[in-house]
Image (tube, rainbow, N blue to C red; front, side, top):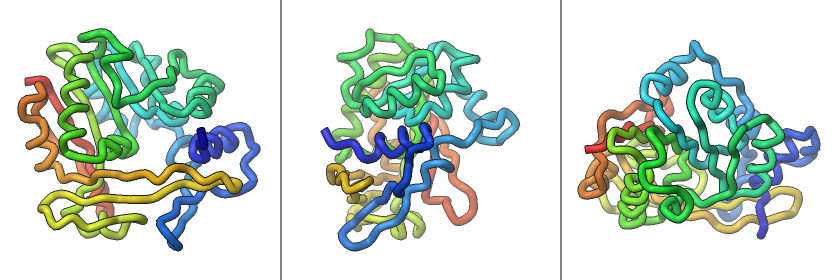
Length: 239
C-alpha cells in the first residue's frame, strides 16, 4: 500500500528526507510542514497544553497520533494508547519512545478495543474529517462512545467552512448546505503518489447536531488564533 505521508515523516525523523512531502489538488500544490506539525516539543506552559491537561484524564487514547508528539508528553501522566493507520508512523513512534503505539483504524474502534476502555480521547490533526459524510461522523461518534467510559471526554478538531480561512485551504470544495464543505487532495513524496483523500468539513454547530443520539454532547469549542479561526477544537462529554 502506498504511504508517501507516513514514509516522509519517518524519513524526516531518521534524517533521511531529501525531498519535500507535497500536497496536491490538480495543478495546485504546497509543501507539507513536517517539522512544525509533528516534531515540535510540547511545552507544559503553553496554553494549548494546559487546556488539554485540564480535560484529559483516565486511560487516554491518542487517535491518528502521527509521530507521537502528544503521546510522548501524556504517557508520563496518563496510561496512553497511540493509534495510527500507517506502519511507517507506528514504527516512527516506537523509535521515538512511545510506549504503546499500535497499528489500527480509528474508524473501526469496536473491533480493536473493549467496551468502556478509555476515559479520554484526542483526535488532533483534522483526520476526523475523513469520515467523508455526516452519517459517517455519527457512526464514528457512536463507536467512540462504546469504547469509552460513562464519564469520558473526547477532544476532536476540524475546519469550519463557515469561516473564510477554510475556503483558502488547498483542495477546498464548496457545499451549498450551511455549515458543510469538502476538501480533496493527495500527498506525493519521491515520486510516490498517495490515494486521493476526501475530507468532510463541518462547523461546530453541525458537530453538535451529529452528537444527538450518540451518547455525546458538545461541551465547548476552542478556536485557532487570529487568521486561523476556521480551525477549532471541540470538547465532547458523555450525556
